[in-house]
Length: 203
Image (cartoon, rainbow, N blue to C red; front, side, top):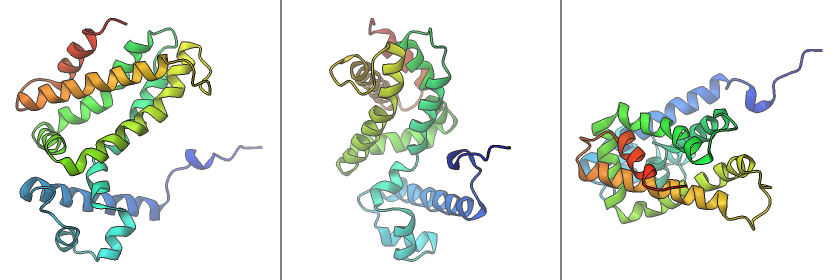
């Protein structure tokens, strides 16, 4: 008997693809407004006007204005987890983490000017601090079990600090690399900055 694919293995249907396309389109327009007018100065009504949608339609795709901003890189965490799982099991966890973060670095590299401006906006806008915290929380929750497995630790055992310590260190290095990238007006390669940051920590 042919095994039917699990739900998460099936390709999305036409309705879901249309929903994703609409969400991406609204997000793109909203981000343009944020960059042009400022995040706090841009209202949901402004986004709706440019996207030519109603407020009810907006909230069907995004629970809040903050979620519009977070959507730009929200898929990166899932890609990092997928990349981490594909790394050799005998590779050092720290090295595997660095290689797994390549999708995020590549995303910034393909949209240098725009990504740089959005990153700077996130850093300088207090209202977006929660977005960053939620993104980091998702990163920790998704990555910790895989790191625990690589360390030979029971993922359900909270008494071993190593998985969380590795994640916290990696996030700190990424934050430092992005800060240096912003300070240099995006002229340096983010990947090299991340390498320098992570190489400075001996693990």
